[in-house]
Length: 380
Image (cartoon, rainbow, N blue to C red):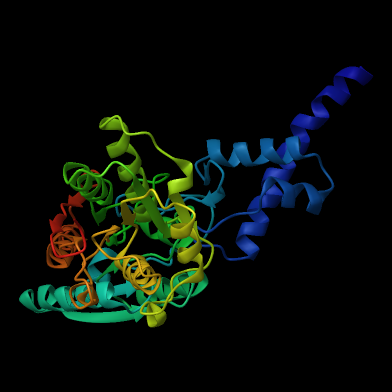
């Protein structure tokens, strides 16, 4: 009898922990899609094993009270497809009913002001005015500030959000929460691979592939690549992969010494000065005849560095960029680069956002905007 009694204890215990977890959720007044206490937190609070707390959370999942996301945690369930919340927890959702959230204001959040983002802002302003809407602009300072901007905009009744995110490894919890609440949000210029969410971005991979191929067709075989650190930014990663694949497809060896990621981010305010890091890279690889740069700022900095070293561009070294910022046409040797169509990006993002605002429940949509090569004088 003793053994039978002891064998029931763990089963009873995890049910008790499940009830206590509900009590914590209620006392904290958590809202649908907020994170609930983790296995570790429950185990520490009640002096039980992680297995017991795991079973307790699984019990709540079975009851439909919470849901779990791999590598993210456990979250409080909420209403589905606009239906009333039917869970046993007496909680109200933060999300306003869809009818009350509709607004003539559309928000655009960008991570910085630059030539590129300024073009996106100007194009977005044109699009929202076509639909008699107002554009609210936010410039996020960092990842935490981005989350605060999102939260305040939603609480303020914004109609929808177009987000150019900060560099992140994964989608933020705030973005994920809005996605789960079916709030109208479209991501631009980035991809979150671990979650399906509407996004519009330039085809960085194809643009880089085509530019590398362009250099090959010009007769170059010793082609280098230099960029700011990839740093979890998908656009930088895809440009690098496009360069690699173009070399492989044309049976050109990929030489590690020809690939350089800067340890210090290129400073746009000093791109007309020689960069010691780029100078060392060029000096150590005199066989390179062409250099593909991850963006125009790096390309312009590299061009000025080469000229200051007495290396003629493009006679000795061809240099190309990516983005086609305004300055790329004004350098001593006008820069051949990849142009990104910001008007089409903004138009596609706004049209997709309007679909969601008008209650479209199609599956997640990803739109790739094609790029094109702009030939100037920096390639021989």
